[in-house]
Image (tube, rainbow, N blue to C red; front, side, top):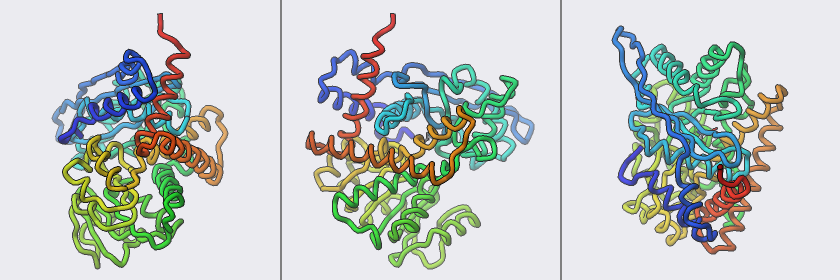
Length: 417
Ligand code: GLU
């Protein structure tokens, strides 16, 4: 969401910085900063009370130098065009950081699905899908889930697109349910990539993850599965979690299975038995070993960055840290694992899903997870080595890797006409 800092302006500062370090000419830097195509759609939806409501949605295609456009679709009341522009460009840098053959795109609808019925969400989703169908497609632009969207919405989009074509087109979208061409391991993939990054970072700084304390902001798909995996696979102790309604803390530890069951029953983590309340702001400042911001943009700013004491901040969310906050965290020795690396597990398994759709041959969950581990671990070490070489932070290093890849591809393709 727009918040105080404009995320699109934040993104441009990062690309300027990387472009200058790489010695790119200014014109090329401008190309890399600019979204190539932006579609705004205003469309009617018949609500349950019989009234017509007009919704506004976007699909922004940022860059396709390295392959088809790729990126999720979010439903949120604070979606705006600059947010979608920033998110689309972060997809370009993300797919380049982990070196998968895609560009970057993003979509969004200004809507709060939590106040809508399932039927209303379905009609909104299908109409939006038909509106953007003129620019998406399995060779062109492949959407996926993001904030407040998941397998259910992806299935409707796949069906709508397929109805328009007259045959099933599973490769038009990723993050689908397994029954209609989704990949095993996709629901947990973003969180799995995140904990792989935390694992590698912990090795680098000599932190034992067993018993390490963790705080998680955000308990949607990414935050909740991060809780599950870091507890189950690494024996870390999650002491605080939060969602949009508030947070909870228990120094003795919060068990994933119990918190998840409570959220399913009550709709929030709030009020979990044996815990004390903690605000969404305070959760970031807790004395923990690992902080995982897994909610929305701009939550770590110059105003609170100085109060963050975690040793590692692993960004499950897109854009949680502002440009100015990054410098403060770096000075204070907080090891930030940047979004374009740390949450790239989702789009990586989306890529695997699309490959499986194109081949019509499906992998086991072990194969998916192993390939994800290889991809993310390789990218982590490339970024780490870049950081050592340039004596910079992990975000600057990830941008250097990514911007170089996209710039090289752009130069090789040349400029039409
Ligand atoms: N929305 C996710 C992200 O921000 C996944 C995108 C995808 O799988 O294409 O990375």
